[in-house]
Figure 1 (cartoon, rainbow, N blue to C red):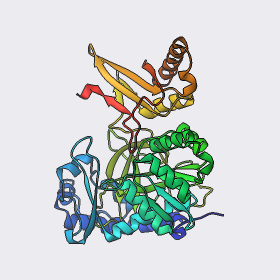
Figure 2: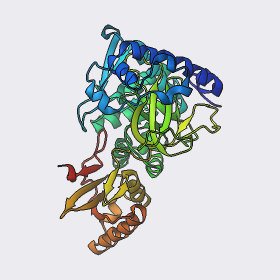
Figure 3: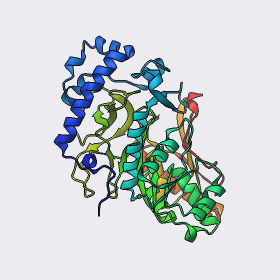
Figure 4: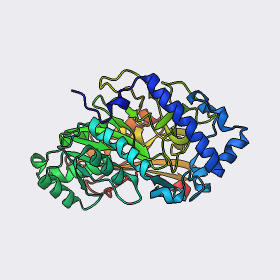
Length: 432
């Protein structure tokens, strides 16, 4: 039996979805042009008027927006609704520059809750479930997004936020949490402590909804085994709305995009040219139903693929693949493009811990790459000679995957700092 939160949209015919998108896009462009001087200027510079946008077929004519635009327009420059209609803000962490602030009207929050509710129901959630939200609350969108979705489904919602792991596990046992929502790295940490405390048989989890950082298929398999759950991916970004822009169904072959609210495109990251479905490129989103902060053609920098194939779950919403890296966060090491996800794939396939760190430096004008990863307890009990042999074996595997050499340092179990939110996987000392 298939479960949907809003089947009239999730299973709508493609032509019906396009009609919704056409109408909402035209309305949004008009509203942005009339109410957002910053965006009007961008359209005027391209010689565009709202009348030039008659349907989604004209979407490619619109200018792109980037994080630089959001920073330049900070804080109110891209606000499309009166401030007195806005009821909340969320913000990015600002770790790579000035914070990006996104505004929400009550209608924006309602549609966001619907998007996250669709994700929870797709993961098997019903009003009988206990949803354990261990994403951070506050300015970060993770906690509030899944919290609102769980409310909409009618689940008992535990707003745990991140941190205080002992309390997380105690509540998980005492209250019988059935769906866990957090970053995959924190789920890995929770699984580790649950195993140490011998509580796995007392955990009733059936599903996990994980996002906010890159994670591999190998990580999925590890979490499913350790927590005895089915692990679902969820995607979102603060600039667009937060988690729930897209979500995974039981088929686990990509995330369905909520197309009644967001139009997705794939472009060539160098030329900006729109690429056909099935082609790898940069993901671009247009918000077509948000009131306060409806970004149009926002360049996410995430590299992925869109495909509209028939899904066994019955949903007709287009799917996006798990992002394969970022066009801007991609590491260029000695002229080679390196994505952290490639390194994670090698480490986990080798049976190592998901706790690792990638350190990039420049020594004597040459880039260096070091991968520090924790051993599991069985490896740690081996001799130094055996550890060195494993390091060399891993170096060979990484060279085969990346095409460049990397130093591997196997660390003692639990010697790397654990994450209670987004894990810091990459330390690039070349920027210091």
